[in-house]
Image (cartoon, rainbow, N blue to C red; front, side, top):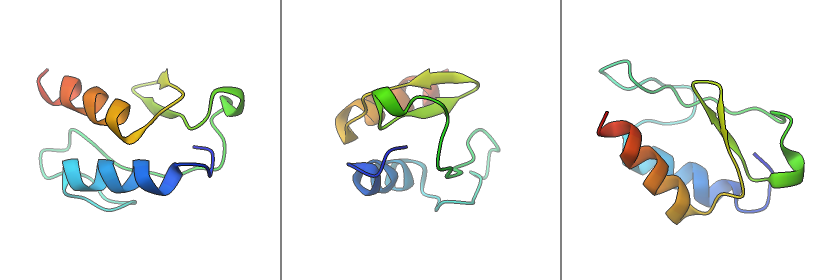
Length: 72
Protein backbone atom coordinates (compact mmCIF):
# COMPACT_ATOMS: atom_id res chain seq x y z
CA UNK A 1 0.00 0.00 0.00
CA UNK A 2 1.15 3.51 -0.72
CA UNK A 3 1.48 5.82 2.30
CA UNK A 4 -1.31 8.20 1.26
CA UNK A 5 -4.46 6.85 2.88
CA UNK A 6 -2.63 3.77 4.13
CA UNK A 7 -3.34 4.26 7.83
CA UNK A 8 -7.08 4.80 7.26
CA UNK A 9 -7.27 1.67 5.12
CA UNK A 10 -5.35 -0.44 7.64
CA UNK A 11 -7.57 0.86 10.44
CA UNK A 12 -10.69 -0.06 8.45
CA UNK A 13 -9.41 -3.59 7.82
CA UNK A 14 -8.34 -4.04 11.46
CA UNK A 15 -11.75 -2.93 12.71
CA UNK A 16 -13.66 -5.14 10.26
CA UNK A 17 -11.58 -8.26 10.90
CA UNK A 18 -10.88 -7.52 14.59
CA UNK A 19 -7.17 -8.22 14.14
CA UNK A 20 -4.02 -6.12 13.98
CA UNK A 21 -1.27 -6.12 11.36
CA UNK A 22 0.64 -9.40 11.68
CA UNK A 23 -2.34 -11.34 13.02
CA UNK A 24 -4.75 -13.92 11.56
CA UNK A 25 -8.46 -14.19 12.22
CA UNK A 26 -9.59 -17.03 14.47
CA UNK A 27 -11.22 -18.82 11.52
CA UNK A 28 -7.92 -18.57 9.59
CA UNK A 29 -9.71 -16.88 6.69
CA UNK A 30 -7.72 -13.63 6.82
CA UNK A 31 -4.18 -12.61 7.74
CA UNK A 32 -3.23 -8.96 7.68
CA UNK A 33 0.33 -8.35 6.56
CA UNK A 34 1.97 -5.11 5.54
CA UNK A 35 4.56 -4.68 2.81
CA UNK A 36 6.23 -1.75 1.11
CA UNK A 37 5.44 -2.80 -2.45
CA UNK A 38 3.20 -5.22 -4.30
CA UNK A 39 4.01 -3.78 -7.73
CA UNK A 40 0.95 -1.54 -8.02
CA UNK A 41 2.40 1.80 -6.88
CA UNK A 42 0.92 3.52 -9.94
CA UNK A 43 -2.56 2.57 -8.64
CA UNK A 44 -1.90 2.91 -4.90
CA UNK A 45 -3.05 2.38 -2.28
CA UNK A 46 -3.44 -1.30 -3.12
CA UNK A 47 -3.89 -4.69 -1.46
CA UNK A 48 -3.62 -8.31 -2.51
CA UNK A 49 -6.20 -10.91 -1.51
CA UNK A 50 -5.45 -14.42 -2.73
CA UNK A 51 -3.09 -12.96 -5.35
CA UNK A 52 -5.86 -10.66 -6.69
CA UNK A 53 -4.84 -6.98 -6.64
CA UNK A 54 -7.32 -4.32 -5.56
CA UNK A 55 -6.21 -0.78 -6.31
CA UNK A 56 -7.00 2.89 -5.81
CA UNK A 57 -8.44 2.04 -2.40
CA UNK A 58 -10.39 4.17 0.00
CA UNK A 59 -11.69 3.03 3.40
CA UNK A 60 -15.15 2.64 1.82
CA UNK A 61 -13.87 0.60 -1.13
CA UNK A 62 -11.79 -1.73 1.07
CA UNK A 63 -14.78 -2.18 3.36
CA UNK A 64 -16.90 -3.43 0.43
CA UNK A 65 -14.10 -5.75 -0.74
CA UNK A 66 -13.73 -7.31 2.72
CA UNK A 67 -17.53 -7.66 3.08
CA UNK A 68 -17.65 -9.56 -0.22
CA UNK A 69 -14.97 -12.00 0.98
CA UNK A 70 -16.65 -12.46 4.35
CA UNK A 71 -19.85 -13.57 2.59
CA UNK A 72 -18.10 -16.31 0.60
